[in-house]
Image 1 (cartoon, protein in one colour):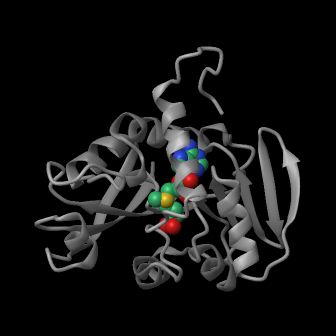
Image 2 (cartoon, protein in one colour):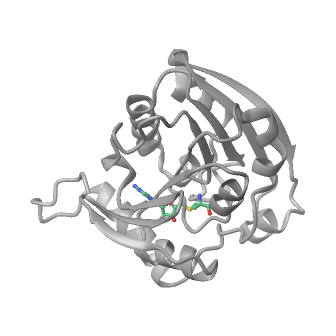
Image 3 (cartoon, protein in one colour):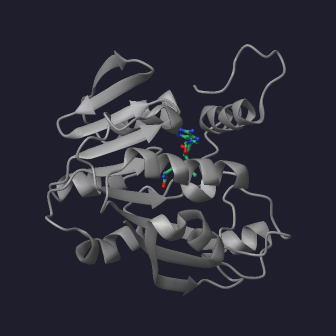
Length: 232
Ligand SMILES: C[S@@+](CC[C@H](N)C(=O)[O-])C[C@H]1O[C@@H](n2cnc3c(N)ncnc32)[C@H](O)[C@@H]1O
């Protein structure tokens, strides 16, 4: 991990890593959909260029989007902090993974599916050589605001020009709930990606207060937004 481990006082980012490890250990993974994400399934056809490009899924959990993309013929690279998530992904889908150290990561691999177990901020351009396509569901919005800037800057650093991101966000009144998932508004997405990327909102889905998640968390509204983002 990239944070300074020499300091006896835990840094803010080390607390974030503990948070996610605890979530997986306790199996508190309400974010896991167990099936392909609806926005990936409905937007992918417009988004994919060749149908066979490698797709990067940052903060991938054990998302079934990985298998869905693989079944469509895409090599997939995922990055996930939790070894529990990486192990479960392959066990639950009956795929045999080869596991080997690839410092600072552990690499889980089954054919064209590669999951780097470790910190996304340790991923460099060599891990994603040739990757120009990214699916971000519950990655940007999993991060607190100071890490969102770092996350976008990191993607900008490691991805080549003309890379495309299909991004799914969530918006709600942040006075009503503390994330994650965090509310990330359209102006924030525009500002984070800024002038170095072209950002287009392609869907806005108002779920309303009756949505089960909104109800559970006492939210008066909840909106999911989908963006297509292209690096200049
Ligand atoms: C909200 S979950 C979303 C998982 C997945 N995208 C999905 O749709 O199910 C966020 C995931 O990011 C992982 N994570 C958090 N910080 C990370 C980091 N710095 N590097 C890699 N993974 C991280 C967590 O362990 C968690 O599995």
